[in-house]
Length: 327
Image: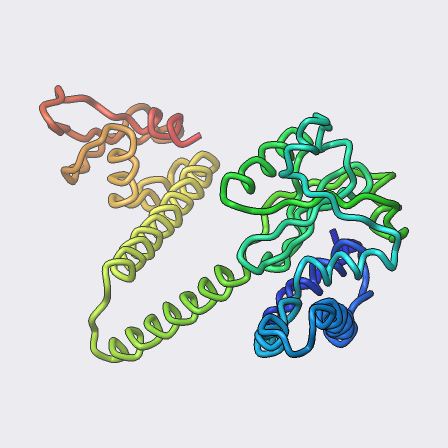
């Protein structure tokens, strides 16, 4: 897309943008188009003078503004047509019954010039793909082959006049490059006015947000989004604390497996409670009861916890089971 020449709208110079986008370069300026318009005006004046310089029609003609250009930068179809003749190009009205009877598939043409209410823009084939080079767009718009006929038909329905450009267009870099590759367009360009309006809306929203943050600074007042964020951070800290306690518990169990006699001292009641909550879904804090089974040389400490959580039957949880659970 970067290789495609695309002039964006400036003032009412859409005729200039249309020609330059068609030819893919800065071929025409307002001064050059104005010169063509003045030449056309002079030719029309001379034709009117043939009927007599004292005639009412001639005096009326002299009082009327130019039909080929105005102060805003608008140029007529005659100016555009004469400008293209310099390059050996000709315009044929696509909407005309004569051309429609030829039943030429638009995909077989090379370019079109479209006009509606003093706005001109170009649709051109570059390489093997079609592009809408409207100067009111932020960039070239890719048009698929299947959509081209529908696109032109829609323009006709909206009242556009469409002209087929006949002749050999000058060589350009984009045409040569796109003969070898095909481009894809993920996002279609917006109208320049829409983009400016969106940027303005974003600036307004940013200003409003900054104003709200300044108003809440130091007041202790938080909106719903900020409150949700605070709650999420609090839950995250709780989960981190829980993970730290369970990690301590695992280390204690591993150490107790190496030195069983140290287990009652290391295995903290609160850590066992965390394990039970995780394993059985209980919320009650268990009561620790300990007894020694076996001889003193190979004693195993068993701890039982009476549980009545949520209507569950009472169960015995043994130290060996706890070890197995954590491993």
